[in-house]
Length: 317
Image (tube, rainbow, N blue to C red; front, side):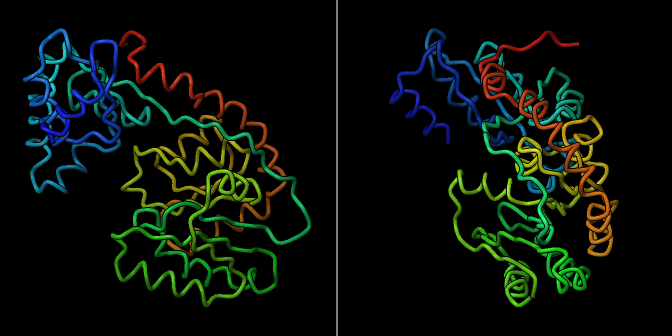
């Protein structure tokens, strides 16, 4: 990877007026960046911004090392990169993750947020079925495997046309048998609308805005500090959401950046109960979500995100 970064440096004629963003930073990236910059003359070193999505605890599971080992390695790698780059800008997707990483790395980590440019607004509630949407890639950590049992728990409402469950089912190459079986099971359920194709961004925006509730049955252990782009897309459009408690997503609702319902565990019965609570409060929650949308869009303004990437950061507290 270091040689690839060196080739990119030469091909793009990078220098101190440029910034290289590592969009999904990990320990391997940082070690490679240090190796790359060790061979670059000081006058040609670009700015470096590192965006983190995960904690050292999560990465330690993939690397099969202890959290302490991964954290220590990060501190060393960041110190070397600081020396070679003249300081690096460390970013995190969310405020919660930034605090965790600041403690782990013993340095200031700035929350970046997620740029939203949606100009589509939520539709006004109609008289048809309440459309509940699972949007985005069908992954295990996003709770896709739960959808058939959620549909079973909501079978009376789906059968009577009170609720219509809309599911994107596109999967990546890592989808296991459980996810494939869940996809086939959804196709056989009544009261469901399955979308199994690539959706262009403008059509995706319209899909979000056309639904009454966006369902995020995500694994709370994976999403304690992780950002959800789907949640931002929904709240920026003024659409209510259903999210697990104890996560960055539920913290957004508590902070007024969206409205919706929560559930304590990623279990089909609890999620179905949360959806029924939304049905009972649909008008009030939809109004609250539309009112919060402007604040969400300001919070995730693309210009502010760009300034953050380029290193225009406030002083550390």
